[in-house]
Length: 358
Image 1 (cartoon, rainbow, N blue to C red):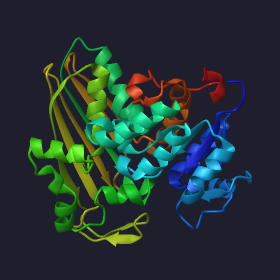
Image 2: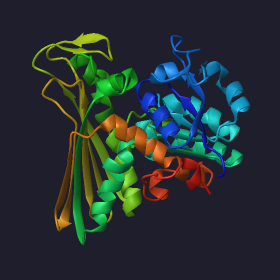
Image 3: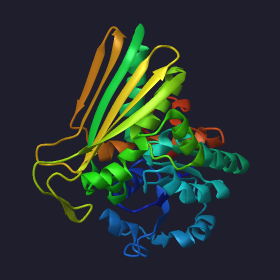
């Protein structure tokens, strides 16, 4: 491509401050921004990024389609919600207009195993208009490519076990609420954990209805099985509330989480496969205390056993850099909903983004 990649940003919260700056610094340009928050609509994105003014004002979601038709972006970055149902409207607007889109929505990383209905709708629309939709972020490397690379150097695998923790304060209110932060234990049991207490048949019906609430690792295990060529026989998840020994204030929720109430949750997803490999992955997302820090640890068991630990990763920055570095891959992919295990390895971009676009 012989010009700058034109990007529109959906959502102008904490993550967007990084994604927009990274786009500029990788030789792209932001041609539009969209939000539902009345307090930021009309603001120059430079004010949001705390840089010089860029001459791009934030547009409301209601006006998004009209604005997109005017600025004609190559791709949209969507950094808003954690469930595919909640980002469907934004992604569908892009799909209808033939605009590529990449989202940090965690379920969007591999949504066909948790919400096949919406995935199919987006896939069909994107194929009609010739664009590509995908999900990426921290999980693309640290829950995905990193593990598949270790697997590639292993003779025989019997089990893959992973655990990753992160501070929900870093990602905004939607993610914090999705983790049950601020709920009493009774509320957590009814609103979050109850989804685990159903049979496999009942779960499949809920998945097909589009109402399933997966933990992040539900989609990650699906991605890993697809990447490694494993055939899933069964998959289950168990969510457990996280608590703290004293009251802890959440700036994201704007409230004090009482001692003994849920600061977040741990979710363990166990997948058994026809090939005899079991994947057990855990994500721990909560309001951090002073003692907590991010950690990512995975072990591939077999011949040989290999463990890798990433201590104190800068999860937000890594998430946003992964999304921006994926942009050329999305633009070079076939039309439809294409998950990233089909795009090849995520690469560091030395040159401007447009120079990687075919």
